[in-house]
Length: 333
Image 1 (cartoon, rainbow, N blue to C red):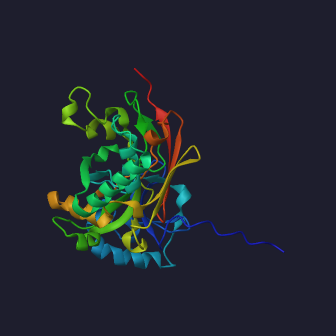
Image 2 (cartoon, rainbow, N blue to C red):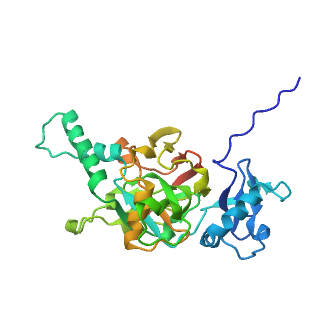
Image 3 (tube, helix red, strand yellow):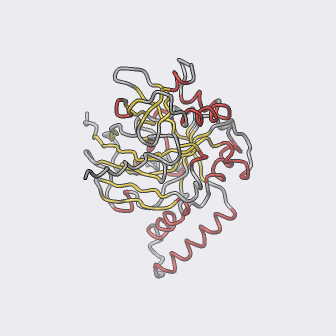
């Protein structure tokens, strides 16, 4: 008697996701991807030869019902995903990044970077830090800064570690993808402006976070975070309606097969709605823009192990798939 093989695990949650793909030597195009690894070219299905994923997001309220219909249509022609290269799922105009947004991560940093004169037991200092984080969540504001779209690369592309980067590090993050122009929106309505979610790895060179020549200026995010390829993104945009609760997703990052980050978005100090609402108070968020929501504990500085040539990172978030990137050291000149 023959045994039917077990079905392959789904690529993501829900009936479909969005991707940006290309055939060998062909242009990048927006695609609907099914959980069983099949692809529909949306340029053909929507009769729009010059369509891009960002254009789809600009028309998200009207496009979404059509995508639902296509995902449930057995008569459309689907091709194997394996025939295509997977690119970053969207080219945003703006990238809003976030720091110090996971409670346990910030508590660990507070304890690790203690004043040498503070000889209190670690438990006491940890309790103090936890109280500070609770107060911050209740009374303070998120910490948001701007990243560059040119730092984005695909979810399976190699990541070049610049020769000048002395301490390159990983930071796996949940990224919200904006689907409607958002300006001065409230926390209560903020998630209505989120089209979907994807995975980002917000690489950072720890050695250049702070200016050595002018320490009073503070952080230098241009230098430390925006080298080409320092933000692997994707593989998919999973519609928000397929993500039951963005506050209950598990993030895991492995380095050469060893788990380094493993945390739930439940540990966020400021949830997705608060992050989107806060960013919109100062800036106008545009369709296709990204709001990165911070990284949990377990980065390289915590482990005392930074990225090196040949390292392979795998980042996964519940229902959003897995990205896999290999690090390549730039030759010194």
